Image (cartoon, rainbow, N blue to C red):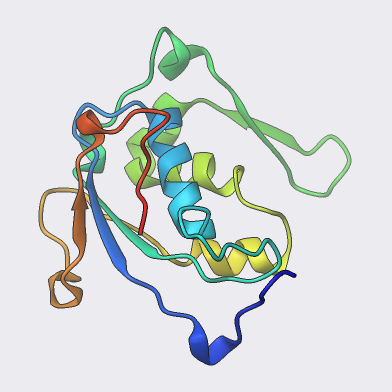
Amino acid sequence: MTKFLKKDQLSSTWFEIDAKNAVVGRLATVISKIIRGKNKSNYTPHMDHGDFVVVKNIEQIRFTGKKFHNKKYYKHTGYPGGIKETTPEKLYEKKPGEVLKLAVKRMLPGGVLGKKQLTKLKIYSGSEHPHSAQNPKIIELEKLNSKNIIRN
């Protein structure tokens, strides 16, 4: 029998990740698993019981290959002929954190639940952030591999 948690039984912790020399896609998969709560044993797909993630040093993030110049992001304005495209290079000049935020957003479910989970992602340039009072647990990306992700 599957046990479902109630809202008062949910608890969330804070994690801190240093994005220095991290690949965007690989970092986004780790972040999306934590935000969704898939690293917990009581994961339920329809509930938001993930953890908060603070990403620092976003300006030192990287892409593999030539994706930084050649990859394209598309959006539509809603008007006829209103398709717009941009590259990570152009997006990075305006907002460095938006590249990672888009990657994580596309790994989350669509709709209200995904939007709520995306608010648990905090992205900062530099090594300082205002969430030190939450005592975030530090995740070292170099020590992680695909089989050994964070477990509680």
